[in-house]
Amino acid sequence: MRHYKKIMIINNIHRLMYLSKSKTILNNYFHSRTGNERHEYEIKFNQRSHITELMLGSSDINTAIHITNDEGTTTVNVIRNFDLINPRDVPPSTIVSYIDRAIGVYKYNIFPSLLRSINPFLYIAMLLNAISLIPVYAAEKIGMEQKAIEESKFLKFLQFIFWLIGLVASLITIVSYQPINSYIKDIFSTLTQGTSNA
Image 1: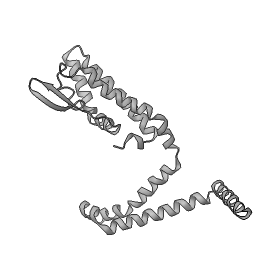
Image 2 (image 1 turned 45 degrees about the vertical axis):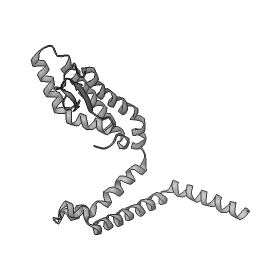
Image 3 (image 1 turned 30 degrees about the vertical axis):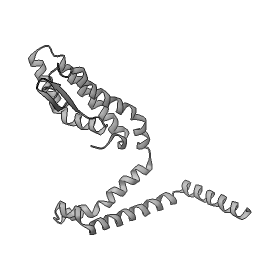
């Protein structure tokens, strides 16, 4: 799962909504009044725990916690093992707080993710990355093994060539775009005049 600093606004909002739902289910689990109700929320959260854990990891939140009791010290994952942790060792509010912290990270990331979403250079980078992977896809189609693909210097060279072609094509497109073209000409003209006056 992509790091939170690299995602765009739609993905960021999706993660916020997903984590909020996970938090609600986990709270309901801890505050259930009957065994059946508790079991129902346990199943619901278990279905979401893997994605929830990945989202926390992508926001730089470590879900491992050290528990010390009469049996010694053990390290457990608070999301994956939420139903196995003794409340006397780790209060439920502490477990929920891990999701809360991730929600805070993604809330703070709303504006930066919006800026990334309207940044044309991000899309250029994504396009270049996709172009550079063409030789890899071709190698997979003809039946090359993954290990051979990763170790092939020729394929890496081809990836670089494809990336370079994509970069040159992108630069030509940017420079030929009329408003940018006029802006570059104005800068060049100003610099030329400054040099001739000196």
